[in-house]
Length: 96
Image 1 (spheres, rainbow, N blue to C red):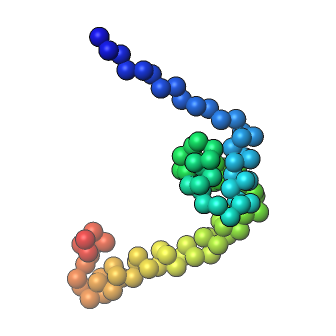
Image 2 (cartoon, rainbow, N blue to C red):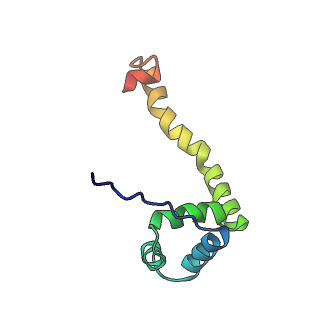
Image 3 (spheres, rainbow, N blue to C red):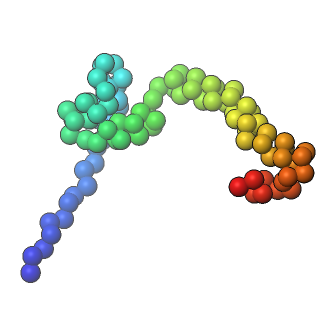
């Protein structure tokens, strides 16, 4: 019988991941181009970026999102509140 070869999972050490992200962030190339040069999938670079991004960048991004979070919640509550005032909906699921 023919057996299909087993594909071994590649493991990259932390320094490789950090250097890959650093090289990508410092270059003007896209993640796809850098990933192809390294022989990996571009999604890996994005995942590693989230994991190994500098604290200053992460802190700023988290602060920006936190500042807009209340407005995002209000945007989704408004249609329900309006429908509720007009007597068209008793629960949010009535709008769906």
